[in-house]
Image 1 (cartoon, rainbow, N blue to C red):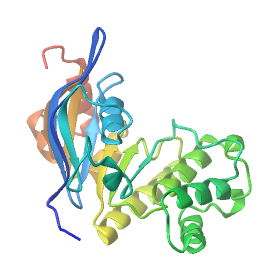
Image 2 (cartoon, rainbow, N blue to C red):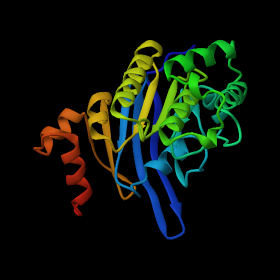
Image 3 (tube, helix red, strand yellow):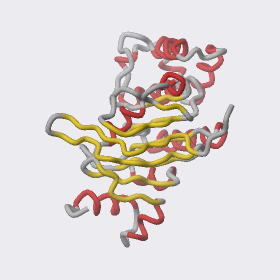
Image 4 (cartoon, rainbow, N blue to C red):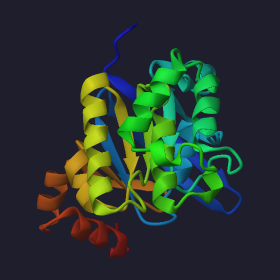
Length: 246
């Protein structure tokens, strides 16, 4: 397999809706093996950006290159090596947890699927809920199942939207450790959208700050904290969100 330095390359990406510029000429890279935070308030353009990376939305202009593949012309080659998790996008509610994992495993042509599901069941403590319908799960259980689904194909790229939302502190810490270990073991690139600033400080090598569809600042968490003269990323986030001149 050809080695690449940047798993994701976004160049002058724009998404225009009638009367709304959702994403405004943004460019960034996600290095192979890196964890990059994509931060911003509601309406900043994070979800639209992730949707374009997944091929769910067609950009108005600009290019997306993932794992050496142009997403406009060769997206299926990249999508087979990617996955996504969000607690806000429901899995099929009438399927049990194990049925969901089997369906997604078959969609990705996962080899030795039974063994892979067993691994994920242990990792995310899913055994007590494997036969429960996805629609009957609690918010925290749904989050754990969504994360298991996102790792079913051992992806080279993970796109994560609030990966620890609705989890108690202990389980959230366990999930963050799992993501750190997965990155270290597989060299996966992770793009993380989160409102949990302690999570961002712990996990992210670099951070992209979005506001009104633009990337208004970027840097390591430590660099941003020092630049804004603040104590932590939560204070930096509030500074950017409340400053109308940025």
